[in-house]
Length: 47
Length: 225
Image: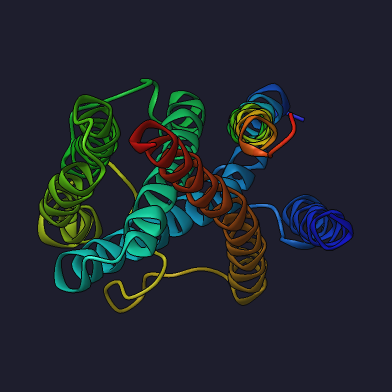
């Protein structure tokens, strides 16, 4: 099984890049959702 | 939310099936052995990255023509996703090259034009952080995105027009080039799985851009009161 470690490293690196990208999108979306909710509650009358 | 989870699960199954095909269905290459199996990840990521940059280019053209924010949102989303896929290409390429060529990197036309493409879209994203006014930011980045896309045909043509250490194309190459039919089918299935991942990421990123725009509008309205 020559070069199995290189194939494994390539797949792991690719999945790490996709996972980190997905994580940054999810984190940014969560932060925006919090900001939107805060703004909405501050503009709602009686609050 | 339920739709998102189902879509993510479907993409995950497709990617799993592509990985299974790459390791257990595609035959072993007589010259390179096991290491050639990086091809299914490397080439499908490269094609998907170029597809993303093409979507970005179309969105940029439509923004310049129509000036509708939705094209700006699509443009920036496709640029980020194209960059992620091209990063995979630039990382997996050297991992494959080292055991086969004996070097990690060489400044050949294909490798250089791909690295320049990656840099151009990094600049596209950095440029957006430098301009505060949304309409001006969208127009400037759309114009830069149209310019950046010029490198895509260079990446495509580099191994066809010039001598290169990079292997010859597996599709639309010279007579006699190409792949074993089973390898070819596995490669196209891997591309299909990567396109499904690209679509999922594009949808998530587009919704993020739309939400950012809603927030900016609300903040402007509050400041105007």
